[in-house]
Amino acid sequence: MASLVPVADPADPRLADYTRLRDVNLRKSLEAEHGLFIAEGEKVIRRALGGGHPARSFLMARRWVEPLADALAGTDAPVYVADDAVVEAVAGFPVHRGALASLARLPLPDVASVVAGARRVLVLEDLVDHANVGAIFRCAAALGVDAVVLSPRCADPLYRRSVKVSMGAVFAVPYARMASWRDGLALLRGAGFTLLALTPDAAAVPLDRAPSGERVALLLGTEGDGLTSHWLAEADAPVRIPMDPGALAGGVDSLNVVAAAAIACYALVTGS
Ligand SMILES: C[S@@+](CC[C@H](N)C(=O)[O-])C[C@H]1O[C@@H](n2cnc3c(N)ncnc32)[C@H](O)[C@@H]1O
Image 1 (cartoon, rainbow, N blue to C red):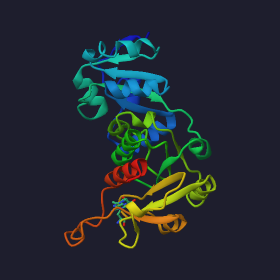
Image 2 (image 1 turned 180 degrees about the vertical axis):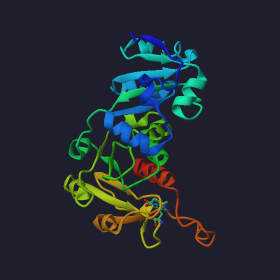
Image 3 (image 1 turned 30 degrees about the vertical axis):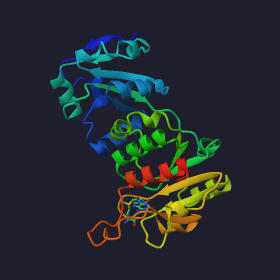
């Protein structure tokens, strides 16, 4: 059973895991150094624990202890209990969902083992926005995608904002990070995947006429520039979600990458 530890000083070194949660650079180095990530909110904390991530500690206002009592009973990690003002001073913002947990990262499997039994895969090239990564995992979980593969530089699914936006789907959908951006797609092709490059390019094949296959990987590009020419060339076909003919004139040249992922996953899964 976890022990309750009252804390009142935001500078208490035992709270270091929770320092300045919105400071992306600080968080990246701190989390990498200690192999940790932060889960926020009762549901997400439960899903992280359910995903097998050992807890390092918890930080919460007293009112959250009771709702989480059964989850806390299963761990020896300390539960730091503090006033909202103390939690806010450590985290750097008011933590509306009340409870935070610091959890240990697990070693990621390699790409070959993550896609071994998969039929439908999403492949994300260099997405930078953690909220987009989280939302795509949520789509993947909701729409029956079997696995997600990340390019080497793609944003971290275990960054706090990704975890939160995914509502814990990052613990449900298996994923792996490619070792090499240049050769990463060759591995998927070798495993028998048809590679469909999603692009708003008007010359691409409309989604409802995209080639099908036993195993399909949908490639999604970075928020600014989209897929690189290397990945577009490596794909079996460029595929577009047709947009309104007047959209470009109105200054809309593409969909948000999450919207594109949701539409394409739905079409892939339903065959429509
Ligand atoms: C914001 S868009 C990038 C826009 C970029 N200017 C381009 O030409 O790809 C991010 C990603 O969303 C996907 N996407 C956006 N709109 C799409 C559409 N109409 N059809 C297919 N994929 C789309 C693509 O994978 C794209 O790389």
